[in-house]
Length: 492
Ligand code: AMP
Ligand code: ZN
Image 1 (spheres, rainbow, N blue to C red):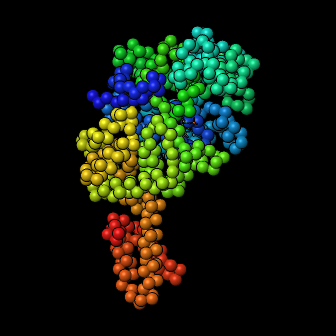
Image 2: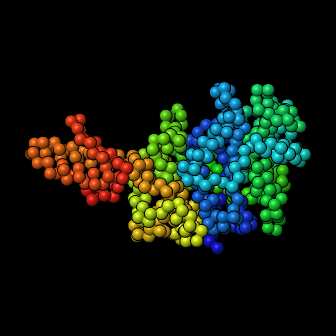
Image 3: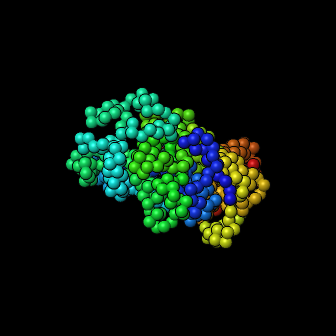
């Protein structure tokens, strides 16, 4: 079987990935807090772990992988958004959850097998907190429940920091009800205006970290156990799953806290075998932030006519463990490359039906060279280079299946639209250049009274399906419904 190598944050080493149970590979990734549109940075972990999900399914079989990504739908940012907008929390979280799913589908992400909402797992969180109190890893205080960080000796191991260093770095304030400034909240009280659930500690709501511990355990251990889907080997490694992922910003404190909760409640010495973290996304070399005016959402880009495939291509061009810079230049290059590939694919005349039937016959496999580089700690940058090789050497079917595998064709029925309309930005540039050319020729022709060059140029543009409008104000060239940019290449 193909071996996948992954950089494990926990050991700081590249390791061979060996699942606990190769018939049931289990992965959990921290998902978004739902109160607004996903910004471009939020799409990075989605795309990175989507590639890993696709690779795991390729290697272990579609039926043998379980991928869970949660929605945090209880959070003070959501409460603030509700108070400020006058809308209900349920309305805001339902709307933004759907936005997230729509936007991520546009960038080619396959939906995980489970997408649990935190508010649907409150009883499991309460049970886990009770267990932690019983084992003296947590204590109730003034309507709160706090995790006793010093009771867990391995706290900080994931990020390689000591508790004292973390206290110094985090400058945590010592709330009066805390035994120790490092202790973190498992449960907190809610007033009447704030969402709350009855609990042994009064009406309240969970702290952020506990939801991932409770939902990962429920969906990756308890549920498959109830359904008798785990091998004896997996059963002998209770409560531990294979891969846990998320953005690097979550490593501390969120993931340290998840590990502390899960290991202390379940009596294990690990929560997940492999921990993967994607580096952060920046824009033109700067941190993306509202105050710098370089903050934008995935939907902003889609609305500007940037196809989801272009966004995905740019994301894949940087390895997930490197900071990624979103630039206009990369976007243009991605657009150009994809357009070239789509033109090559257009010669196959595939529809979604053709692709589905090829898939069902097992005649639709990504090129080995693509799988090989992805197995090398998800080297997506190299995968794009390999795609270029397939394109250059005319391996059209391999290129098609590989682009499909990497999520770089989201709609086979609309390939033509992607070439001619959606990739409008580039096309407009090209066509504007032809318009300038035609205008120059016209100015020259008015002087020489020889319009043959103008006529020839105009004829070729029309022949390619472009619409040409010439008036006193100038020349306009636009793509018509049957526009075929390949025919323009003859003009170059
Ligand atoms: P949040 O909704 O802020 O909890 O973030 C959801 C996911 O997006 C988490 O996995 C974060 O690590 C990730 N994330 C947030 N901002 C960025 C960024 N600028 N670059 C990459 N990942 C990010
Ligand atoms: Zn989490």
